[in-house]
Image 1 (cartoon, rainbow, N blue to C red):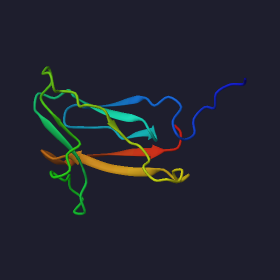
Image 2 (cartoon, helix red, strand yellow; image 1 turned 90 degrees about the vertical axis):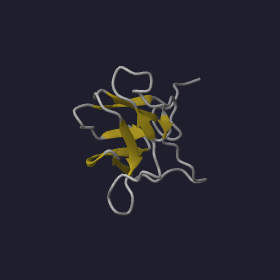
Image 3 (tube, rainbow, N blue to C red; image 1 turned 120 degrees about the horizontal axis):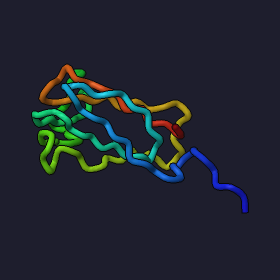
Image 4 (cartoon, rainbow, N blue to C red; image 1 turned 30 degrees about the horizontal axis):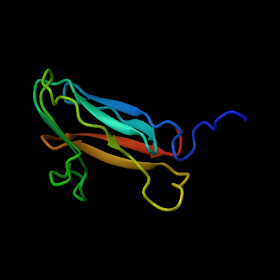
Length: 117
């Protein structure tokens, strides 16, 4: 029967990736298409995560996650899946999603989605 193919598209076993927000900072991450991201707020203040708009600032009209402060029920976001939606396979080149915190617009990070990690 052979071994299942590793990597590729679509992801054989999509996984959930976690991004911590701590001391007003976030790390860049690389994920496979089909994977999800959960933001974990470890700060004592609420944060709102949004993709960057054309002005280079987080767009409050396109919120990805609204997080309450650490220790509360909604300090973690629901999983946000980065799924390729075109009818053709995704390109070999990674796609970069830039985002940041609406409440702290200088805090920004990148999610790089690619065929395999």
